[in-house]
Length: 392
Image (cartoon, rainbow, N blue to C red):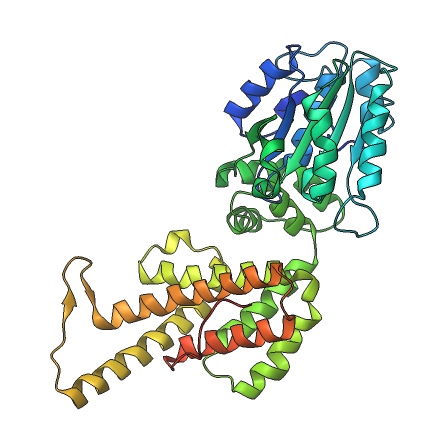
């Protein structure tokens, strides 16, 4: 099925907001006889798959232009209906991580047959789901491309691809969009649908999703359309704001169980924690206008003041005990207390990012979450950390 949902008076590459330079380069590729394989790289949610479908539609179109497919010809209509005879996809099925090598071989062998509706046959491949054997099978097709075939690869992590594969593709980066562009995308794609279902998506909601998505339109649309996210964020925020007052038993029971019950959204919960920490850093640097969770400003200020008061109290006690004079960092104009507070908030962000990396390597979930919560509690209370090291 294609994923190029129609919007009134908007056609071809114009369906993508932003990416002006990339769209200009695509125009020259589509209108030439260049049969090089296109590789679209970018983080999950950047819009790679939607762009890949727009490129495929343009390549199959009977009258393409520099703006992409005409969307009027029979080929474009078949593509929009999801039954174009010369378009196919190759991706993992049934929850599997990789495409079986034999399926890769069979799919590529089918490309030998000439197209039935136009000049080209187009194959869209999720390269993240090709193991080394699958990539080696693909390599032969890349080395000896057929005139009537066009390949489009999408990939989040190009470092996983074989150097021989990377050397035979045109690598195009799908960059993150600006906050203003994400706001425009949400308005165009979601507002009408949500309102028609009796839901309400306010301007403040749209701005929040635009900031929280960090330039990824796919993530912004997923969170804005999903009713589960608001409850999830509220739960994560409750855990975060209570860290300095919770006992270790609370962390091992109620807090951990919340993360366990929402394990399928682990990456999103980590993103929420990081957004809260970075919001506190915005309070530190007095850049309140950049806070993402602005509706939680009161809770953020309260948590920040508790950390600040605790550090000031501890530093004063240490100075009194050791007979030290107060000092100030002249370059940043920060006091010792402020430097320690900044260090603690920054280290909390590092701890969470380490947890994310370990989760990607399938390290034990309970171990990771409980250690992360303990670290965050100790950072919030100015206690000594347990040994920090990369999870193995």
